[in-house]
Image (cartoon, rainbow, N blue to C red; front, side, top):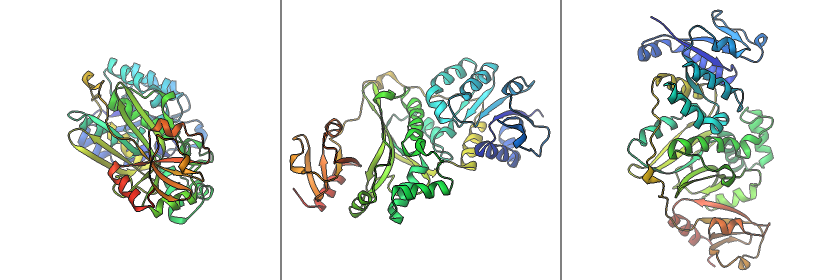
Length: 405
C-alpha cells in the first residue's frame, strides 16, 4: 500500500505538533484515507539544531531538495511571514501537490491567488489552521454557505489580547503588568505588537472575509485598533455596568463592500463573546436561515493548530470553495445607530447635536447613540469611545440603569 508523502515546512511549535500528531494517529488516518501518511521531509533553518528519531526523514534547509523529491503528495506550511512561504506553496501547487497552511499573514495577502492556482492545477488548498487554531471555523463556514448567507461575523481571534484583558479585569492589573505575565507564560512574544495592536486578528478577519464574501476588505478603509489605551479604571467602570472589554474583529457586508473592524469593544452578558476568557478564541456567526452560531475553543498552540492541519489532510481531494452569488452584492445589513460608552473627563453637554445622550455613568463616562463617522470626528482628545456590541434594546436598558440626562 503506497503512502501519502508529506513535506513539512517548519519545525517549530506547530511543525512539531503536526509531526507528532501524524505519527501518533496513523491508525486513524489510514482508516479514513486508506493509506499511511508519512512525513518524508522537513524544512528547517538550521539542520544542526534538530535531531529526528526517524532517520528516513529528509531534514534540510533547502526547499528545492523537498520539491524535487520523486514522490511528494502534500506540502504543509508551518512557517511565518509572507515569504518564503508564498513562493514555496506556489511551487508546490504548480508541481501538483496538495497544500495546507497555518500562515495567516501570508494567506491574508495571497490566499486569493493560491486558491485560483489550486483550482487550475486541481489540487486541494487547506487553510483551517489560519484562523482560530483548533476551532473548526473554516469547515463550519463552508457547510453554512451551502444554504445560508452569512450576514455578520464577530470574533475574538487573538488569545494574547484576550488573556491580557481577562487578567486586567479579574486580577485588577495594569495593562503593562498583564502583558508581562502573558510574556512570562509564553502567550505573548518579546515584541507583542502583532497581537496587542490587532494585526494578527486583522489577518484572520481578511481570510474569513475572502471565504464568506468572496472578496477581502479594502485594507486602507478598515479599522484596526489595539488594546494598549485601555486602563484598569475603564475596566472597572465597565464591570460596574456588567460589561466586559473584548478585542473583537467584525465583518459585515455593506452593499458592494466588506466592512472590517478590529477594535476593543464592550459586550454585555447576553452577547455570545461575553464569557470567552483567557487565551480562548471564539467566533459568532449570524446567518439568514440558521440564525446565530457560536464556536469557541483554543485559538493557538502545538496540538490545537496541528488538529486543524490534520483535519485538512483528511479533506484531501476536495476544493470546495463556496460560491458567492451575484444577487448578494447589493444587499447589506440594516440597523440603527451604534451605542457607545464615552470615557474621559469632558463637558458632555457640549457634545455635538448628532450625539444622543442615553445616560450618564459618572462625571467621566456617558452612554450615547451616534454614527461611527460622528464618533471619529470628535475633536475632544480627552474622550475615548468604545462601542457597545449587542442589540440596541440591551444598550438602552443599560442606559436606564445609570443616571438619566
